[in-house]
Image 1 (cartoon, rainbow, N blue to C red):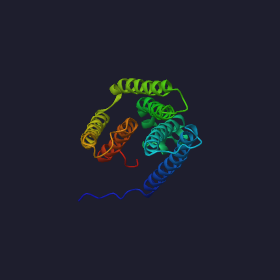
Image 2 (cartoon, helix red, strand yellow; image 1 turned 90 degrees about the horizontal axis):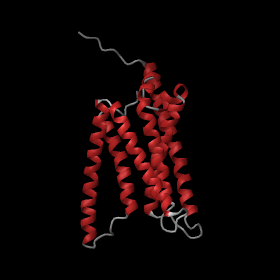
Image 3 (tube, one colour; image 1 turned 90 degrees about the vertical axis):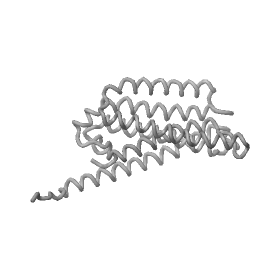
Image 4 (cartoon, helix red, strand yellow; image 1 turned 135 degrees about the vertical axis):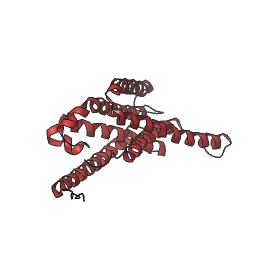
Length: 224
């Protein structure tokens, strides 16, 4: 009869500490970032009588999430011995160094997308910046992200490639469904036509959500 080995209490305790550190750090970082980002938008766009619309709140929140996740990853990579293993979901420094080939580019791309989205929001109608600045920022972030993806793809193992492909498929399926019914209802006058910034925020937000859903199904979100 095979003896069932009980989980080591010390290991479980370390995992719990790591989980709460990741959760707490992310929550605080995200909350501060959200307040800061929305305050910038609120004060920059016509500070006298400007009020945050649903579109700006949604898009600003998505931009903040991208920027915070990227910054979160960068902190872990820059301080591997002190915080890297605890902040990022890796077992040890060796795995962190191995994953660094992928994480460095991805973290910079996330930060770039978040910042570009904020610049775009601040460059909209009656915006703080010239429209060309927002458009250029989004264009540069897009090109940079595509370049990072192409460069990192050869370093992906089978699991990471499956995660990427399945997340993209799920994103496309959700967006197709939303746009199909939204545009159909809008055309016959039942609801308003899709707002461009809402569509952009939906795409960015749904992709992140899809990554977390697929990662969860693959067991990649469990604390290691």
